[in-house]
Length: 241
Image (spheres, rainbow, N blue to C red):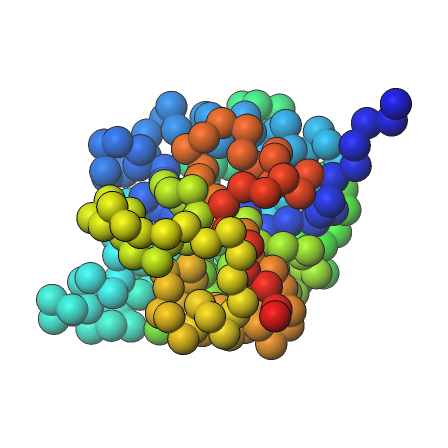
């Protein structure tokens, strides 16, 4: 019997910065990042092309700093630099696992990362390198969710896989409301109308306009990335009606 084929050939995996912090809540937990790198390696071995976007909230959150009086643009640029730090940490963990990677930064810093060039990114993916997109879109006022949507569109990804600490999208915060209901699927319009915490409105609208599905799943459960690429029903899928 032939081995099952992955449902998706090219994916963009979006990780929050907080996911890298693990239980310590701040910075980078080496155990967590090594675990994610190991899972990415397994998915790569299935013949899937993988790009990554990692947030910076475990180091610095621009919106939070702006709300306390810091200039929003300056705060956002600092947040972008935090994503570069996370990207370099992930690159190191992946390469220690035998995975060839490239970090492409939207803000030029040639000593540590390649500048982002779309065609170069696609070429790296075709060569089975994991591409890590750093520094968001390179612009303030845009989140790493929006960066993930934009980059996924630019490279022609089949889906955005958004790894979180919960097993999908709920009607309310399941940690605070025991009656919260988990959705197995949603439309983009439902996400926007209900104000659900999938991705921010700009990112969701971008996916809707280009019919790019988003899967929200529990990153903390080992093997979930692989289950997702084979089309198993884990988490919540957001797509057109």
